[in-house]
Length: 329
Image (tube, rainbow, N blue to C red; front, top):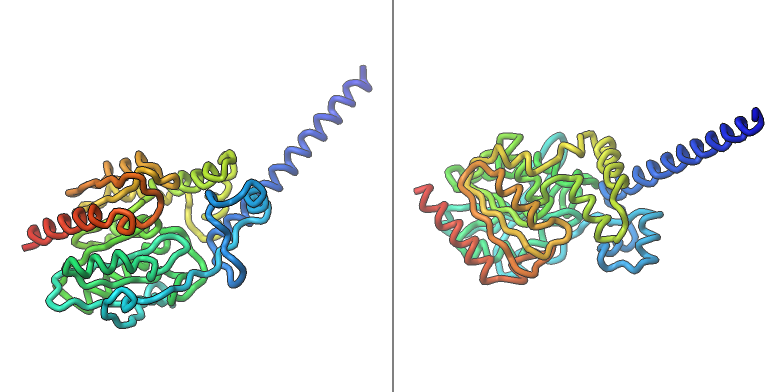
């Protein structure tokens, strides 16, 4: 009996040791993945989007993590027929933000554009052209870590809210009395909501595309697209990413920031978005505390709406800008 008892204890000990080793290994993998997601690389080919990976490629990515080279621009506003000049905007600390300003004669509104994750300002030139045609001057901004800005890392909208605040302060100083409208896509939308809802930035209106509700949910959906369980890997990624970058990833939730946003808001979302589900965007919209409008785009994923549904996008944005302009007068 004593020998049997010792054998059971031995196997229990082995089992606990294996569980501890597995948990430690999972944490190491999560730490590496979080670092790769939040720190842009310097070389190599960018890892394809989850939906474009083969089963073997997905397995390789899960083991080795992603490679995301630092985003660099392609083209400039002259590519889409707009005049522009380069600008450098100081943000927090020694951070410098690259930007393009596209002046419009007699424009009463400046639209400040903020791009999504692993992107940069030239990715939104199609939207900039439409804002320009609607009579607005446009300022396109590179977030820290992207394009012509300094740094090589990202916090998926958390610290980028400081860049939003810096860009608004820049416009208020350069063109006092001008109406300021913020346009954010995905991560840019999250940064706008945090800047307005938590940092006290006061634009005249905001336009948000494809905004996620919580950091945890947006990470979970990436695992779902890969076809693998998200628990507990998503939770570990959010935890370690926050620890690496100095913020609480579980509290980085645009749905909570929205409750403090009282300026007029237009929220645009595609009903085919697997990265941010329609009902999650609707929850963000429901929390907005000021005048608001929600516009749904059919059969559009996490991509540029203006490129897929130009007429609908221009009609919704144009009506919103006109209505808010009349309110200002």
